[in-house]
Amino acid sequence: MKKIKFPSAQTILLIIAALTALLTWVIPSGKFDTLGYNKVDKHFTKTSLDKTEILEASQETLNNLEIKIPLEKFTNGDIWKPISIPNTYKKVEATPQGELAFIKSPIKGIIAAADIIFLVLFIGGLIGIMNHTGAFDAGISWLASTLKGYEFILIILVTLLIAVGGTTFGLAEETIAFYPILIPIFLAAKYDAMVALACIYIGSSIGTMCSTTNPFSAIIASDAAGINWTTGLTGRVIMWTLGLIICIIYILRYAQRVKKDPTKSVIYDQKEEIEKLFKNNISSTSKLTIQLKVILFVFAMCFVVMVYGVSRLEWWFEEMTAVFLVGAILIGVIGRIKEFTFIETFMKGAGDLLGVAVIIGIARGVSVLMDDGQISDTMLYYASTATNDMNKGVFINVMLYIYGGLSFFIPSSSGMAVLTMPIMSPLADGVGIGRELIVNAYQYGMGLFAFINPTGLILASLAIVKVGYNKWLKFVMPLVIILTIFTMLVLTVSVYL
Image (cartoon, rainbow, N blue to C red):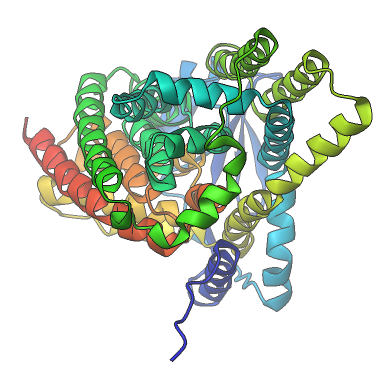
């Protein structure tokens, strides 16, 4: 009998989109009223089903709406998206999403995710230019020689640095740029592509899961919960440290096993295919000339500038994309690439990541179906009522799983924070625990599910490496189970301290 092949990332996401469309026929539609701050006219805008009201931007207004958030969180820009208003959920006329809506959802998703899609395509163009110059070949040859016998340092360093980026400024989507660069380096070190994938994706996931100063999760969620973002910071730092150690040990054990016996690799049957995909960079003996050193320096500076811009200058996808475009042009000039060759090479490099871009768009289409079907608020409402009269130890762990489940439909950390925190954080008062523990449950729940969430970044990341989702699950599930048990223990202990 012919072996059934596991479906591609695109097919998995289309199946999920179809199931989401079906849910809009089953789950009642509903909406919370929302409150947004107009920083130009300095007033609140309350939006409900049938009307929009202009309200005075005062603490009294917030108190009357039972929103326990200091006014300055809105006026200083900490909360920049409209938030849900507690106790305002109402059922609305059902808007089930039919066949046409399902067919259009990937298109709408691609349009909605245009910013990150263009970032991915321009990164692909830059990688194409770098490969053309031969700088990668020479750099990888030098690095493989330098680290000979100490290749494990690469695993620790990459995972650590990306986890630092994840916890401080939310390094996540940007890591897509690292896969084509680092995979050949790990292959040259006699590891498999799964090790490179794990260092980057797990590093980012554990970092964002235990965010400390990340404005897109820890800070915005704390603000939306009405507490200072430093409340609970020490606990999150400890959680980040211990979680990162667990992840690094897990990756190191797998990496050493593969290094000793390549047949132990979960992607051993793809070994030749993957090495062929990155063949330009695996066994290079190119000499690292001054010109190539300058090219590598410019390439590295693209990422330094990107990280600085995102963390310090409030840059987002437009600015990041511009950095990679300028970097590609500079490298083309330094490498003396002719204009026609530059354009052709850049476009081919962008084309290599087109499949990844489409996956990102289809994943966003799932969220579009949820929003158009108006079932996101309904799911939030029922989730918030499910925790009534619970023991606080049980309560906090149920919150962990609620946030993990909700993140399947709302993979955006900032979107989840402004949508749920005004509703969920007051529940902490009722069971006698600090609101910072709701912020922790939100971060840890979303973070744990992010390791395997098909509507998040994992399918796009796997598409770059040409690794199937089933193989990733086989590799990562033991780690997810370990981290889940560890997280539940930490949360349970924390509510009784």
